[in-house]
Length: 441
Image (cartoon, rainbow, N blue to C red):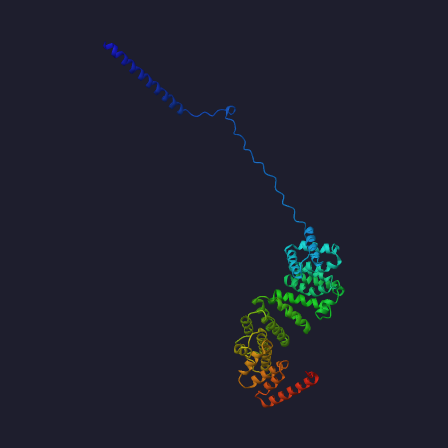
């Protein structure tokens, strides 16, 4: 009975032991395998190489769109312009002007190549002859804004036409300001090839010069001056006449468009121009030109900056300064004021110079508002200055009220001057009445 119970238990224990031994043997075999050195299989049995990387196929480069056809663009705009000039557009006059402006803006938005292509089309007589002239001038005028050299060359070959003879100096001036060396080379080439003599004399006549060469030489100088007044050589003006100097100054002053350039110009004239009369004309013309478009405070500071405060001014220098001040105040506009009057008369102790300054001020104020000028004189104290102001004022009243002239003349404080002035005015009034008698009503 005992063996029946013991034998199964023994068999179970034996089976468990055998299972454990089998498991341990497997673990020992695995540990032994891990401790062995790794064997590298020969090349013949190595793993196959990885698949080659497939490079992406590059897309074909996209070709840029062809540039717009400048000929087609030019032809389209010119056709619209010609149609407008032919008055087939159906717009009113104001509408036509607006459309013309828009077409010009379209032209200005295109490159110089398109504008030059438009000129080529016009030269080929693609459009009616009656419209070609107006079309060409519009195109060249716009082209010259960005390429003044092209405008100069085009106009110089066509000065028999009034508009090109008139506009050529302006374009040459602009070219010289932007690129003085290139403009000078063109001028020299024209001179060597007698190009100025082949041109119509109309350009010189419009500027009141004897020759086209003289007229255009001044444009070169004024353009160069406007570009860099600090480097300009004023000796180049010494051989020119008064008319040439006036034209030079008028054109150069127009383009001195910054405070720095204006200051450089005035100081260079003040120190470098040896002829006091020539310097005075240049500076007073500058004051007259700038007073209309430069703040008075800036102009006053510029003029006051001339000369050395520690050095006494010479008589010519004081005259230049006083005339500049008078010109600036005279052209500044507005009502007369004690401040501007006192500033203009600073340092003007010479009686003749002082009289000139007062006369300039009263004359300028009378042109703006004759009543305010009269009120200003009434507030002045009796004396030489007031008498000089009255003399100028009576001339301003000549076209307004002859009786008022006599009344004002009778208020002059100097007896001899008063009598002389009254007698002179009475004679002038009587002469006018005889020459221009009033018609009976």
